Image 1 (cartoon, rainbow, N blue to C red):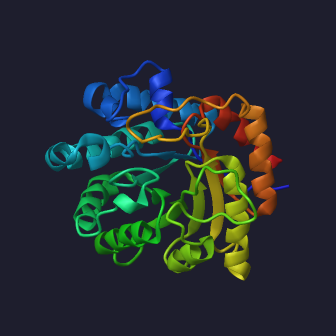
Image 2: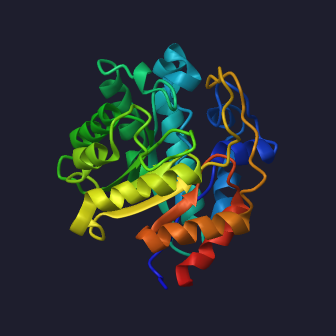
Length: 302
């Protein structure tokens, strides 16, 4: 059916935990950068060996939400630079071309757009961009839950690279509730508005860290919103496999379990459906492991 599918890696934090690397809340995947950087390099290599075409810099936890404001101010640049270098080393050691995507995650909490601090965010994103820039082939804004987050990230990239020489992918996140016919961003803003806000500034629009059922609906909205720009603007997704959040859930207080139904084969079938909708980028987020990524490599020639 298609050979132009790009396969991303899987969920770094949970793979580090499963591999026995240092891992806990609140630092999440940043703890390994602090205590065992070689574990991060090995995790990247695991996903490369599984067949990933793109690995994502382990900078998701290098933000105030996970490190705390003071430690981010003191060590954020150092840790983001280390994360970028480890990804670059793993990619360059591969026996085939592997791209490195710089990670630009939520600063103040995943899934919590109401906590976004617009006055403070630009300088923090400048740190993440400047530190990772020497090592990356493209930029990936991850788990973006509002248009304000999206445009703030894009503005930071414009400050660093005003000529737009490095490709940018925007990855939104949508709610976990069982979807109906309409799915919006976690902020409540429509997918159509979210697409319109970035379509002239990105090469791809994806969805991540959300249940695959909700992503399927969101991708349909994205196809409709792009119209004849679908193709020149790529679409895709990398879902999580978290169990549903219970009432009162708060990030950094609970580590969610894994859905048993999202086996590698089942996730392959879901991503096959996304490709039928027009997606050309697929991968895994939290609780998606190298075996899931290996299954997705078959989609390149499905």
